[in-house]
Image (cartoon, rainbow, N blue to C red; front, side):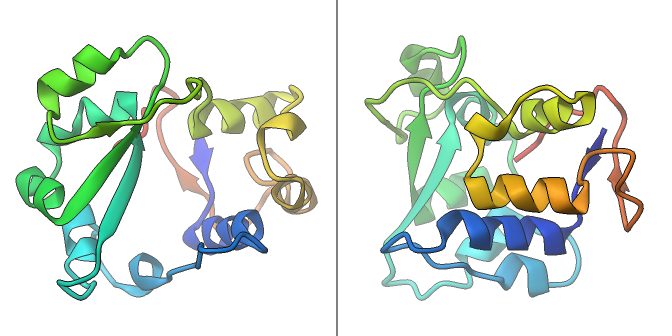
Length: 160
């Protein structure tokens, strides 16, 4: 399983948010050397800035295992998107401070999209049209892509 290098993830984010009022691309995690922990990123914002961290319910249930997780929860409001078989009760049990969003569940993951690209399954409907064009043009997540791959075992599961 492959994920794209940071420069491609940054460009796909730029394309995905282009023209959306209130959203801005922030490079601080890309430009900082070494391991990137969420708390370190949150600490780079002014203390008077109100921060929101949006995570899927599946990720929210794992937040207690994050590096300095209590500080993350204290610094940012955690907005939880319904996801898969993870219930609101499951989230509340481990993350009572989280704000569970009332919306249709989002039952797709980046891992699943990468798998669909790799196997040639239709995924256009799951990503922004400009992001789709970028993935196709570069050949990300496919054997056509021969640049600076970042590889993981096939059973890799995304971690926060």
